[in-house]
Image (tube, rainbow, N blue to C red; front, side, top):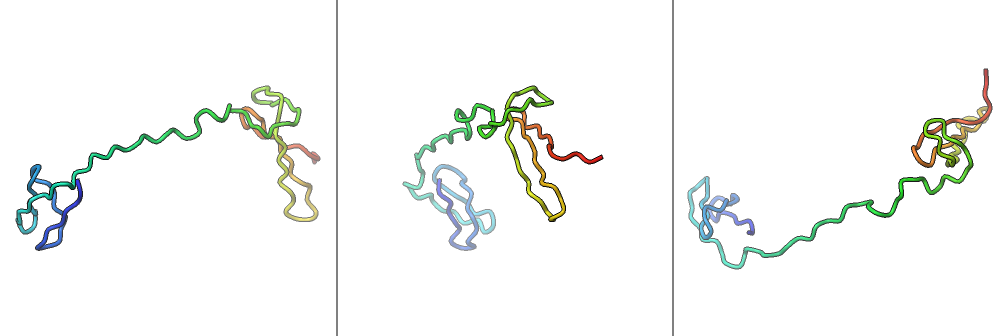
Length: 108
């Protein structure tokens, strides 16, 4: 059903019955025009992300055993440096659970 407006006070008219609308503010009666009721059916939206991903990281190609879940491959992530006197930050992200561990020079 399409939205109709009152001719007197320009407010939205809620339907009173199948063929009549009554304005709640000024009380004006109007007949609903025929042909405004749509029988259009809407398609259901498909669920996003279903069926394509197997749950493993496709970029995980480095051989490394995860400390958390024991998966055998990891993705290498290089975070770069912020200042010239810092070492680069390199992380190994597990291809299955996403656990990240930092590798590089260890200082004590």
